[in-house]
Image 1: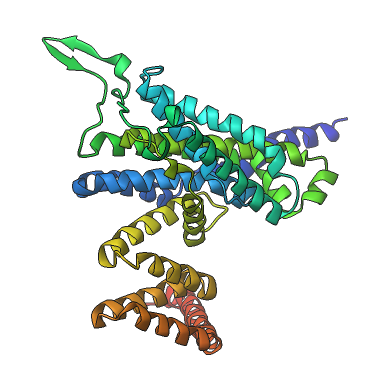
Image 2: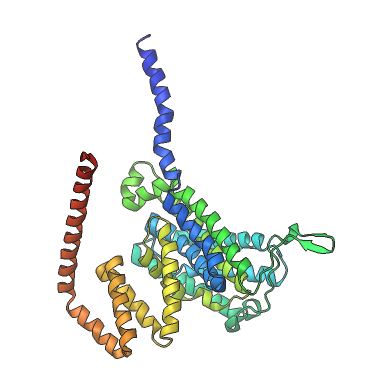
Length: 402
């Protein structure tokens, strides 16, 4: 008895330490993460003339985050994620136009819940079949939602869009008068200060929720399902229930993103259901990566800035440059692909090359793809050797006597 009691006490004492050791690192914020979120705060003061573009970037980041939840953590690919985005946008715009809910924050939540209901209702269709079947089903859902909105112009405005939307001040219920002045509430301004702050706060709050979800036991089970659904079901994980749950959560996030767009622009149109919006979202995740939450945020910043600069430089063929970047990212990876695309763009701008001349350069790179890959592999080997020499030299310098 006396021999077993100390061992039990030591095991009980070690259990909290083991629990802390397993759970705390996933919840702590690294310095890089903190610096990442300080950047948009600093941008508010450093770039006051570009806050409208900043709001669009934040909305796209939230939209990409919603797709990353199902693609990066559950391997559910979608070409119709704009269905939830568009539904949230129209719900928020209709609530504001008809004065049903005047508080933007509450309307934001209601719009997200409406999209979540649609996501839950369609999840049973999406989860059937292979990846190709899921692509077609999600695309069909988005096309159906767009056609429904087009067929009821008396509600949605049809092809002209929903006009006459007036957004009340944020937290307007907290307004009060004192000495003849009105305090409280944040009215959307033409310069985008309130819209940018509003979008940033919403994105950060929902990011915290998503971070908590993916680091929870539920999120760990999702990763197991992504790795091997059959093995996960054999160990007792309810695969379909978890996929339905994360798909519904992702639909809620997409609906909130669409509601943010409607509230910051005071407008909703059929474009929110477009296939291009869903396709651009996949491009955002290709640029930033999937499965670590920050990929959608980084990809949204890169994509929107590239899109804005290319549309200014080449208004007619800017989509060609976006496609060029996508091809090189797939062929050569994110780093080398971005460098090669940037070099071609710089040369084309410097020499004022035409569209057809750039196409010839693209064709030449395609023909020499094998040689370029061999050169990049040699470059990777050289970099690896340099890094290895640097690491081996560091301990020698540290232990060298003065």
